[in-house]
Amino acid sequence: GSVNLSKLEFFSPGANPSNKAKGGWLQNLNSLASLDFSYAADGISLTTQVSPRALGKTHDEQVDNLVTILDGYFENGGQHVNLNVMDLKDVYEKIMSGEDVIVRISGYCVNTKYLTP
Image (cartoon, rainbow, N blue to C red; front, side, top):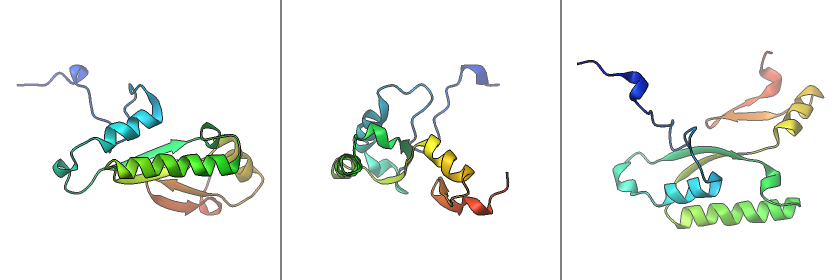
């Protein structure tokens, strides 16, 4: 028989939160770390992003908090993370001023000076 696609709810790509996810970044990390990874022989990869301002007021605070969060994730069983820590406004301003910026897209990197508009 046929399948009514309008009634299906698709999984998000990889271990990334779906559009309906609630609870934020930390809840997503805690949920993933609690999974039984024996069902995922190739591992589970999370591509995620966080704004530096969400991690603290100073650079040292941001680094310390990020290290603590990721240490907790991996100590609780988490696996691979593709992490982008960036402020999109800062990135845009750097690109517009001609500064080189490296952009990672799902783990792949490219220098922005080689991209065409």
